[in-house]
Image 1 (cartoon, helix red, strand yellow):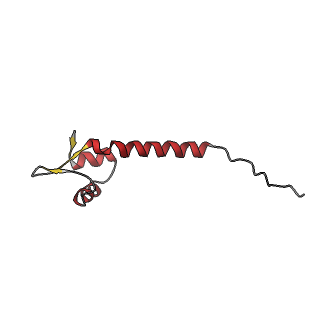
Image 2: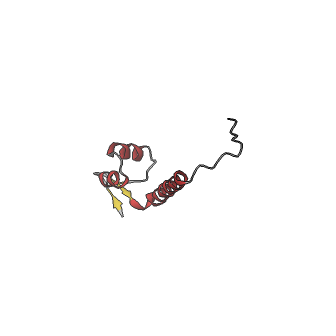
Length: 76
Protein backbone atom coordinates (compact mmCIF):
# COMPACT_ATOMS: atom_id res chain seq x y z
CA UNK A 1 0.00 0.00 0.00
CA UNK A 2 1.37 3.38 -0.99
CA UNK A 3 0.88 6.59 0.96
CA UNK A 4 1.38 10.22 0.04
CA UNK A 5 3.82 12.30 2.06
CA UNK A 6 0.98 13.79 4.09
CA UNK A 7 -0.46 10.35 4.87
CA UNK A 8 3.01 9.06 5.76
CA UNK A 9 3.56 12.01 8.11
CA UNK A 10 0.27 11.22 9.85
CA UNK A 11 1.08 7.51 9.98
CA UNK A 12 4.51 8.11 11.55
CA UNK A 13 3.30 11.05 13.66
CA UNK A 14 5.99 13.31 12.21
CA UNK A 15 6.02 16.67 10.49
CA UNK A 16 5.54 16.53 6.72
CA UNK A 17 8.70 18.60 6.14
CA UNK A 18 10.79 15.96 7.92
CA UNK A 19 9.31 13.23 5.72
CA UNK A 20 10.06 15.29 2.60
CA UNK A 21 13.66 15.85 3.77
CA UNK A 22 14.15 12.11 4.41
CA UNK A 23 12.75 11.25 0.98
CA UNK A 24 15.02 13.76 -0.76
CA UNK A 25 18.02 12.42 1.20
CA UNK A 26 16.95 8.92 0.07
CA UNK A 27 16.62 7.68 3.64
CA UNK A 28 13.02 6.76 2.88
CA UNK A 29 12.34 4.90 -0.35
CA UNK A 30 9.71 6.62 -2.51
CA UNK A 31 8.36 6.73 -6.04
CA UNK A 32 7.72 10.05 -7.76
CA UNK A 33 4.54 9.90 -9.85
CA UNK A 34 4.92 13.31 -11.50
CA UNK A 35 2.97 15.18 -8.82
CA UNK A 36 3.89 13.74 -5.45
CA UNK A 37 6.10 11.12 -3.87
CA UNK A 38 4.43 7.82 -3.03
CA UNK A 39 5.87 5.89 -0.11
CA UNK A 40 5.38 2.19 0.54
CA UNK A 41 3.86 1.77 4.00
CA UNK A 42 5.37 -1.69 4.53
CA UNK A 43 8.92 -0.37 4.79
CA UNK A 44 8.11 1.05 8.25
CA UNK A 45 6.77 -2.16 9.80
CA UNK A 46 10.12 -3.33 11.20
CA UNK A 47 10.90 0.16 12.50
CA UNK A 48 7.55 0.45 14.29
CA UNK A 49 7.92 -3.04 15.77
CA UNK A 50 11.35 -2.09 17.15
CA UNK A 51 9.95 1.09 18.69
CA UNK A 52 7.20 -0.89 20.43
CA UNK A 53 9.76 -3.41 21.66
CA UNK A 54 11.95 -0.64 23.11
CA UNK A 55 8.94 0.99 24.79
CA UNK A 56 8.01 -2.33 26.40
CA UNK A 57 11.57 -2.87 27.63
CA UNK A 58 11.64 0.63 29.14
CA UNK A 59 8.29 -0.01 30.89
CA UNK A 60 9.64 -3.26 32.33
CA UNK A 61 12.84 -1.57 33.46
CA UNK A 62 10.98 1.26 35.18
CA UNK A 63 8.69 -1.18 37.00
CA UNK A 64 11.57 -3.24 38.34
CA UNK A 65 12.19 -2.53 42.04
CA UNK A 66 15.51 -1.11 43.14
CA UNK A 67 17.50 -3.86 44.91
CA UNK A 68 18.85 -3.30 48.38
CA UNK A 69 22.53 -2.55 48.50
CA UNK A 70 24.40 -5.34 50.31
CA UNK A 71 27.23 -3.05 51.41
CA UNK A 72 25.03 -0.55 53.25
CA UNK A 73 25.91 -0.51 56.96
CA UNK A 74 24.12 1.40 59.64
CA UNK A 75 26.81 2.97 61.83
CA UNK A 76 24.57 4.93 64.20
